[in-house]
Image (tube, rainbow, N blue to C red; front, top):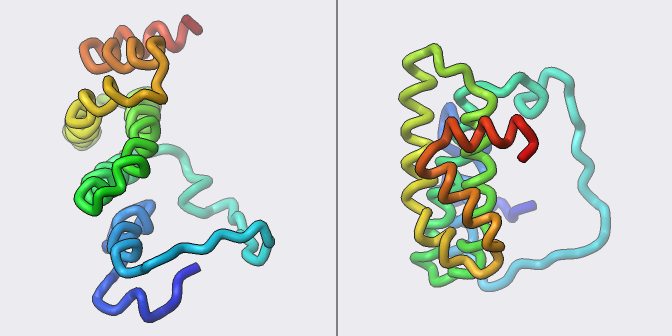
Length: 158
């Protein structure tokens, strides 16, 4: 939950899913501290027709774009540890986009190229991230070079 005053001049982007990812860093830049509590005081209502329950489509790739922006802004603010923690999400969500989307449409092909470029842009960071195991780094390298082969092995359970 955010205090209303933090939103002076900050607006959620229009037409994007996962819109909080696109403003998180702007909010973070304004505060001196963040508090966490174990108290349950916020309840989420899960509607069947909500965006989160709809079939995966190309707009879900907004998540990857938002994560990319988050990493960039966190690095600018010198929060490298927080930025590094986002790397696994970028990789996993990129793979999910490739798994779930039908490549028949030009829009999907174009958007998947953009998503792949985001993942590729973070490749060196992923390879140097100490929390990734050698096996995880091998998966990332295989996906970067040969996404179709990577997905084939994933479907085969290897």
